[in-house]
Length: 150
Length: 150
DNA sequence: TCTAGATTATTGCATTTGCAACTATTGTCA
DNA sequence: TGACAATAGTTGCAAATGCAATAATCTAGA
Image (cartoon, rainbow over all chains, first blue to last red; front, side, top):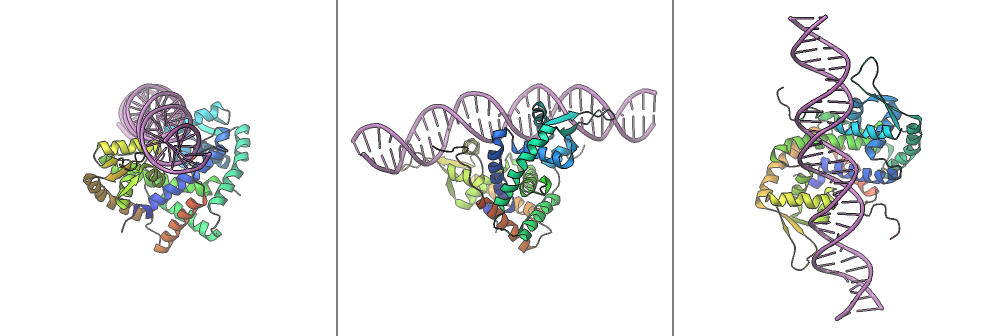
């Protein structure tokens, strides 16, 4: 029998919101949002990315991301380039300052994660991550929203 | 070594966003948001609640919730009452129409969850829920944000 | 080659959100 | 009792968000 408070989407949201709130606090003094941090950390991981790919990976609307990357660029934390061989896409990269900031913040993320999973074994954490990845791939990406027949 | 895309907060957000997107699609025809659904489902579970308790449980700012409950009330899906013995609090309840709508939507939530966890065993799902609850309780509630010494 | 369609990102606009300030009520304790 | 503090909710306002429309570029087929 169904109970909201025992359902996976609810529990997922609740844990996700809380962990994001805590992290948001920690990076607020650098005037960064969680989404901004994710963009930076993703670029640290991938070296560069187009806006669209970033949007997928960071789970944010591309229009939102466009503006968000705009402000990061204004702060010289990332650079935006339109390649000569492809004038549609925008390549986003970390600047040295962006990289330095990211490196400074990553330990906070590590520590936060450790706090969150403090009483779980490595196996439990691994199982959790696996489950989270599975759920993601079990559900359809909602790019073209309510479109039915174009 | 830390990688954003292997971190729990990131995976949590990614799964949570996607599952919420899918559910949002399904209930969009009833002009409900996911948060609205959660309010309704919570009231179905608890029969009644104050705004503050609802906010905690639904992981939403109380100011946001105040307006959200206002629109639900306008649509006659919930009622708001200030008890005579306590004029500060507001008791929120489902109306019969709200209850009917909730009962109609709950099977969609059940089915969505089944899709999300389709390839997991009951034990795996139980472990997932346990982990999500643990992470929630391992992290501090951020009610009074950056307050340090009042 | 030229055009129709697809891809990628940006911007306009309305809605939603969150913080802070405010109102109203209740609790406390001198 | 009488104030002062604490609690609960609402609202103003600015910022963030999402969808739709637009602009710009690339791709593919006739």
